[in-house]
Every structure is written in structure tokens, then in C-alpha cells.
Image (cartoon, rainbow, N blue to C red; front, side, top):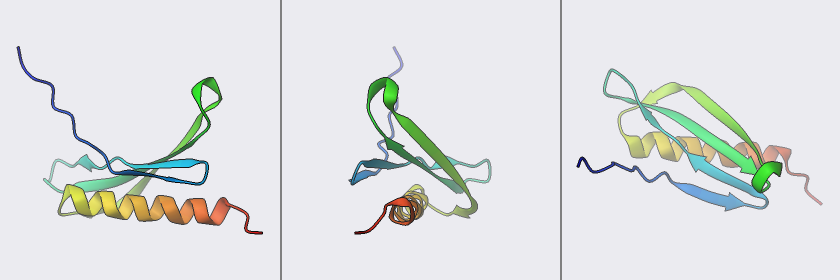
Length: 81
């Protein structure tokens, strides 16, 4: 039996949003940054996936960039009182 490989993605919760970095390996050996911004639960959940043009030398660098971009997006769409 071949063991499954699971890569843990960095994620955080900011208000009602769950922000998860989803970097992916590129054929060049570098990494593309992607982020999922989700809200809600069950059948009422929604998610926005954003992919970025820049590439990164490491999986961790791509994840950090993706999380920062996701947090920026949440801060822009969340009303302040």
C-alpha cells in the first residue's frame, strides 16, 4: 500500500471568513500562490479562490503571500463601524 501524502495548508479565521493558502508546485520547481476565502457552513457556504501571477521559490513563501492577500481582501470587503 502506498501512503497518501497530505500537505497541510496554512489557514486562519478572520471574522466570518476562513482564509486558506493553497500553493501549488509549478513545472519549473517554483510555487504559485493561491488562496481560498470561504464563509458560511454546509450548503450555505461560499468560497472565492484567487490565483496570483507571481511565483515563489518555496512553498512557504507562496503560502505567506497568499494569506496576506486573502487578509487584505477580507479587510477591504468587511465594513468598519
